[in-house]
Length: 205
Image (cartoon, rainbow, N blue to C red; front, side, top):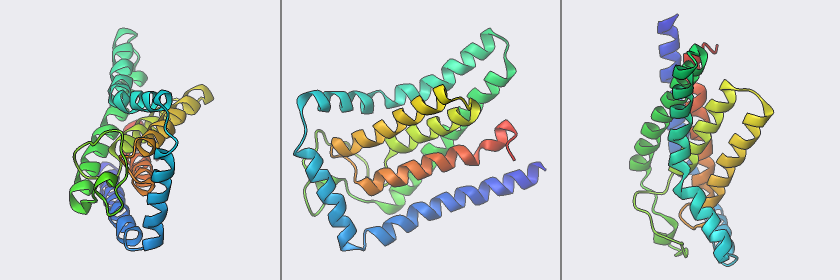
C-alpha cells in the first residue's frame, strides 16, 4: 500500500511539473494571450490608489506569515490539547507547503520567465522583486495552505476565508504589477495540486 501511494505521489508531482512547463510553452508563444496579460496589468496599474496599494502590499508582505503560522499554530494547539488529528493536520499542511515550494522554485528555474517590469512591454510595478515570474510563488503557497486547510477542516467558515485569502493574495500580485495573470493562474493550480498530492498523509484515498 505504501509503495503504491509513493508511486502515485511521484506521478502527481511529475504531472504538476508537466503542467507548469506546458502552460508557458503554449501561452507565451501566443502573441494575443501575451497581449491580454499585458493589457490586464496596464489596466490595473492605471487604477491604483494609495489605499488599495497599501492593502495589497499588506497581503503580499504577510502571506508567508500566514502560511507558516497556520501549521505552527495547529501543531502547538495539538500538542497542548493532546489532539493527534490536529497534529496530523499540521504535518499535512506543512508537508504540502514544502512540496509546493520545491516545485515552484524548480519550475521558475526551468521556465525563466521575466517579470512584467522586465518584459517587452514594461509594466509599471509598485516594487521590483527578484527571481523569475512563472509561476507566482505567493499564489502557489497561499493556495497550498488554503487547500490543505480546507481538506483538513471541511467547514464553510474555514473553506470560505481560506480561499478568499488565497484569491486575494493572487490578485495582489497582479495589482502590484509583479506577476502576469498566467503566472497567478499557474500558481493556483500548482498550489492546489501540491496539497492534493500530499493527501495520503491524512489517509485520503
